[in-house]
Length: 94
Ligand SMILES: [Zn+2]
Image (tube, rainbow, N blue to C red; front, side):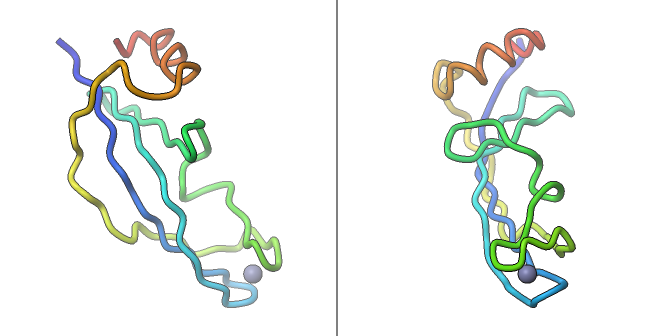
């Protein structure tokens, strides 16, 4: 029986161009294998370590690192974004 759970991650960013610093929050959906799906505001998004721009100077030259990692908390598999769930279902995640 395969478990699916969601954890919360905060990532810290530092722009290498202008020195701007900020954090972004992500929910991470784990399907029990290596695959994980990062979501922001309930929508799937790119992983926190790639594809992000500085909100000030729009440089993609960023330093990023996990700011804090809370323990994964098992959550109902019927929870969450319907489109993400159907996508996971197509991946045979559950
Ligand atoms: Zn910047």
